[in-house]
Image (tube, rainbow, N blue to C red; front, side):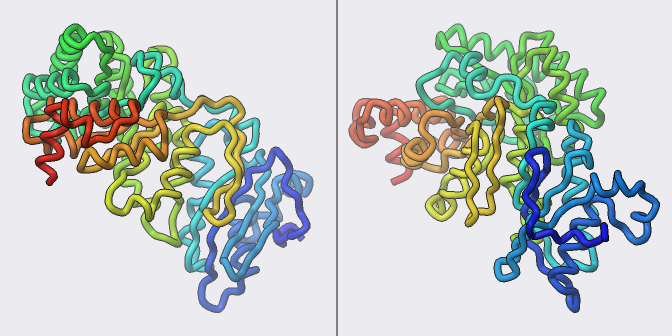
Length: 426
């Protein structure tokens, strides 16, 4: 009886984890058989092992396949929360989207979303600072924040790296970060780079009268070395660290979040390489869920996408990711396979979005996301004909124009950097 997990009449308990999947059975496997296998493989049922369980415990841990739509290939499974180690994002995701993705009974399987019940939400850290705390750190409350990475990605020595960061800061960037490819190479050692760039940050703060944030990449071979680097940043006056979250993994992210609670550091995360998990349309884990997990794990800000000539095609997806980052209560969206989620006081995570190749795209971004977004302006900054400092200044001028309700063309007439950006882009 316990191996029959299909229970269409079941109403999930508020303590259950609820998962929505896209499912396509393997050849000669019925949809019901595939659903039953999915629920069992992700919980208590595997071959004859279930016979060894205490019947009362087996009943308590039994999952329920309570929604099946064969035409749309949609399945929803409710898992009792006692199946999970609440504070382990790695364990949660490996349970409901781990081994099952390799099953020979299922041809295609995508985990769209998970409803996290109150107890796990309350036990996970969430962001230390979130949107409000980061605004306190930067002293900027009335506009989007401007961010850029030092370029080229790798190859600069520490002094040149710091000089580029200085130019970005004085031009108008609120934040400057390392590239994810830059950690502790021979040509640019971590400690020296951090020391010189923080000196450049202090000089830029003195010159501009604005607070500036440098996000040094502390991604390391081991968690121990990552923690040592985080302590180093804290000891020399840093407010931020950066981690490359996908290759380091959820356990590294959560370890860093534990450490930053005491050190008082905000965490910026890159998720380059997420296509390894999210890339296949119908056999993967959704980017939406990765974003949700990042907020639960405690990242303060996360890159969620970019705006380009295809912006309108992916506008709804970007808006959904933005809402996942900042909303306290998210409504379900059946068409987008988004389940409702009560964040129960977990702080909002600041979304980072690329501002595109031309300044004219930034107003469109602001129109969609308003002010609670960090605009990554790399392309517009480094392609500026007057250099990266002027490029940063032109990006700030675009934001000023939008907030003032003035057209970019009109604002450019009295702002040289913006006019040059327009001239260069034709």
